[in-house]
Image 1: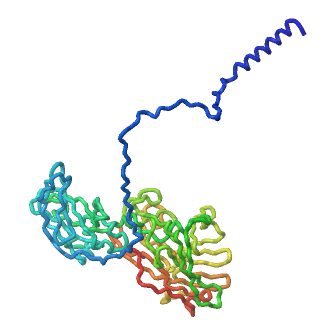
Image 2 (image 1 turned 180 degrees about the vertical axis):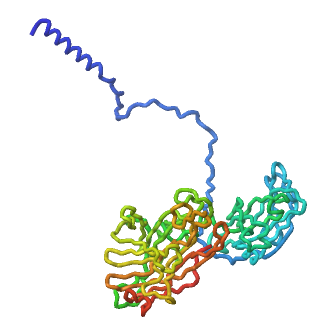
Image 3 (image 1 turned 135 degrees about the vertical axis):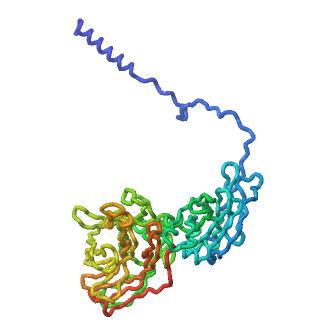
Length: 530
C-alpha cells in the first residue's frame, strides 16, 4: 500500500521503537576477570601508636561442689547490755563514721550524718533480750533495744546485728532473709498484749557475705513510741524465702507438667519397692524415683527444699492443690481492701497431680463440670458439704473417675464405714484464707477482718477403688504451725506440711476399718523451714 496511509503507519512504528529504546537502563559496571566488582579503596585512618594489650586478671569463682557444707550449731545471743560511745570522729577521708560495737553483744551502731555533720545522741545504752523474752513477744529471732542518754539531741543512727551465730536457726537461707522491724516499747513489759506485737518493717540492708543486717532508726525524746527503740531481727511474713525459693509454696513445681523430646539431657532412675502380695490386683506402687532435671523447675517462686528422700528424689504422691495469693498482690485482679501478708482467695486456681503427672483443673461454666486441661476423658467432681470432718468452710473433697472405672478420691478424710472413734486419713491440709471481694467464698459485708475462713490448699489422695470393688486407703501425718493473722491481730493455727504415714490395701470397698494389709512409712522429724 502506498500513499498517506502507509506513511502514517511507518511513522507510528518508528515512534514506538524510539519509546521502547528510551526506557533501557544504563549498563551495569563491568566485572573484573575474577568476577568481582571494583570498589573504591577505603582509608584505614591515621595509625595509632602506643597500644598495649591489657593483662588478663580472671579470678575463678569458688566451686562449692568441691567442698562439703557443714552447718554450724545455732548459738543465740545471751542476755546482755552495754554502753556505746558515738563521740569518736570518723577517720580522715572516710565517707561514713566508724561503727561502734557494743561489747559482749552482736550489735554495732553507726552515726548517720544529716547534712555535713552528725548531731544525734552521743551515748547509747543497748540491750539484748534472752530467748525467753523474745519468744514471749512473739519474735522468732533476736529482740533488742536502743536507748539514748537522757536529754540527748534527736538524730539518726544505723543499728546492725551480726547474725553469724544463728544464721541457720530456722532452716536454709534464714540469715539471708533477716530484716529489722520496730516494735512498741511495751513489747519489753507486756509482750502478750496484741498491740505490743505490731511490728513496723524498717528498710534493711542484709550483707550475706558478712552475716550482718542493719537499718537506720530515729532516736530522741520526740519519738511517739518514747526514747527507747525496741527492734527485732526476724524473717518477715512477706519474705517467705527470698532468692533461695519461697517456703510459703508447696512442693508443686512447673517441671511436673513439662514435656520434651528424648534429648533432654537429664538422668532418671527408679528404685521400685516390692510390697506384700494380696488376692486383689489393686496394690500400691511404691518406688524411689530420681530425676536430675527436677531442679530445673525450682525458682525463687517455688519451694526449693529437697524432699525427705533427697534433692532430685521423690516418692509417689497424688493430690489436688488450690493456689492462693498474698493479700498484697491484687487477689483476683483487684486490690484487697486491707493489704496484708495473709493468704487471699484469687479464684479457683486448681492443679491435680495423679500418678506422676499434673494438669490444671478447668471449670466449664457452660456444662457446669470440672475438666482436666489436658483432657483424658476422666470425670472430675467436687463433693461439697460432705461432713468429712476436715474443718474447711464447705467440707469438700474431690473424686476423679478414670475411663477404666478406677475411682480416686482426694481429701475424703472419713472413709466409707467411718464412725466416731475410728481414724481419719488427715488428708486435707488447711490454712486461714481471706475473701477480699464480694462473691468470694467467705466474703462478709462486715469487712475484711470478718471475711476469713479455713480453706483447703491441698487435698491428698486417700481412697482408691476399682471396678471389682477392691480398695486402698492412704493415711497422712500433719505438721502444724501458728502465725499472727491480720498483721498479728490473732494467733491462729495452720497445717504447714504433711507426709504419707501408711497405705492400707487388700480390702473391699466399705471395709477400710476391717482387716487390711498395711505399708507404714516411718521417718524422723523432717519438716519444711519456717
